[in-house]
Image (cartoon, rainbow, N blue to C red; front, side, top):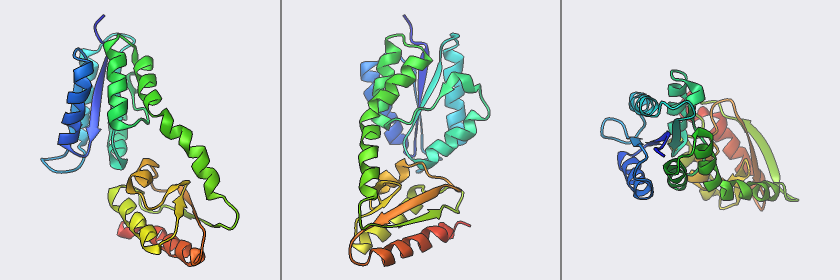
Length: 230
C-alpha cells in the first residue's frame, strides 16, 4: 500500500531538517519527506517554505484519510506552522507535540506501513511519551516544602523563544540555585522552549535555598520586562 501521509519537517536549520529527512528516509523510503528548514540560508523558519511544503504534501497525498503531519523543532517553528494552518485545510494537517527526530522516524515508519493521518500522528506522539511521563514528577518537585513560589505573565508576544529562553536560563544559572519554570529546569534552554510558552501565558516559578526569594524576584522582573520586545 502506498503511503497516504507526507511529513513536513520544520526546523530552524536547513541542515537539521535535511538530516532528519535522511534518517527517517532510511526506514521509510516510500514516504514523502519534506524538509522545511532555515530562512534565506540562515537560521530561522519561513512561512512561505512551510506553506509550499504542506501544499505539496496535501497535493500528493490526496486520499480521503491521508494528509500531512508536521514535526517542528523549537518555539517559533510552532508559531510559523500555526500561521500556515490558518491558510490550509486544518482537518488534513496534524502538528503533534513530539520530539523532532524521534517523532519523525516513528511517524515515517507508520506512514510507510500505510497508516492514515490519525495513525501517523499517534506514532509521533508515542515517540514523545517518555517526556510526557516525566512531567508530573517534575511538577511535584517544584512544590516541595520550603520553596519560594511566584507567578508571572509573559508580556512579549513570542514568549520563550530561543533568545528569551536563553536569557532566563542564564539568569537561573547565575543564581546558583535550582529554579523551576512551570515544572522544568529553568537553566535549560531546551526545556524552557519545549514549554511552548507564548505571550499571555502565566508561568509559575519555584526556588529553594538561601537567596531563593531574591532570585525569584529578579527572574520575575526579567520576564515581566518583556525582554525588550514590548
